[in-house]
Image 1 (cartoon, rainbow, N blue to C red):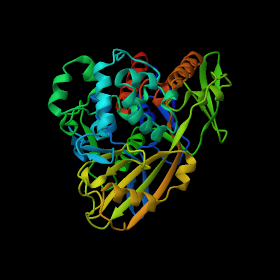
Image 2 (image 1 turned 60 degrees about the vertical axis):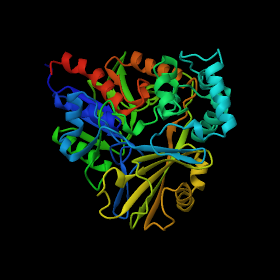
Image 3 (image 1 turned 120 degrees about the horizontal axis):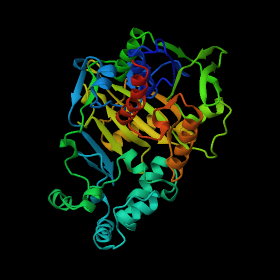
Length: 451
């Protein structure tokens, strides 16, 4: 075993934190670098008048890999575990109280029947994967449902035509299936492979999750999780550098041997773990980056506290697909952990818009939407706050994955002792999958170093 291997982890989100803990557990001398003032990325919270609000619907899931779960969750008795997730959604000016999937039956009857006819009679319908979203939707659902459902919903979320988008975005938003027909007919049709791929179950809130989701039994919400991970970093003697960035990567041939920080501090490197966009690493090393540019949407969070139980919905999370509303996702904290606000009731509304629209939105507008949606009674909150998070959600164009894969490949070819993990690796999107991916990437390093 080589003692005291020097590992530098760049990026202090969940994947970066796990990578640092995993390497430190097996004897590496680890330093983690985060440009902001706090670790956790989007799994952090906003503090407003003594209350802690999550930055969106970021509820963690167990990974099923004991080494990962033990390291990042510690004592599970500190968490509420859920085998089911209770969600609902608003589309076509009505609520579906049992699923986050769009309910096509909310369409005007002539559009709904035309959409069904196309699904059952159009010979071009197919089940193979198509990278262009417009082509994928048309060949799977037909032109009517493509126009009357997907065009409006994706324009709201992404700010552009579906012709420009990649079909991968359906997985990110959970939109590969629609609720159509009755529950009984859906059950029968889902026995056929094609229909199973496009029809959603009516009782999604009763379907057991592959792995439990967990949420802290604390009035700190998701901050409790991050605070615990920061404490674990200290216990493993991980050096945490916040408020600084990597200015330059020092390398000989294809080996990174050091990084120069924005304050001119130099760190020696045996292993580099990169959990932020690899284009930043290429630029820091003076390596040309493949041409291309990503587009992003801005997330705006609206936090509310009400003095009594004025919330009319029982779901944990609500999705607002209807194009006439700026609200996108709503987190109902008291339906996740009843004592979250110790007698008060709180929620967070998440909007995905352009930066300009985000700047125009205000708390009163979102409050009116909540009342109009029937989520709350017509009452005034005792606390309300707004937080704009620019450029947080990528617009997944048809060429997005191609470019991400090209940059990732260039990164790996340029650094023989570097590991690319996290969303920017292009391997996965969801945190659970990304944790397993990071574990699989780093495990050979652990074994080869004799740890």
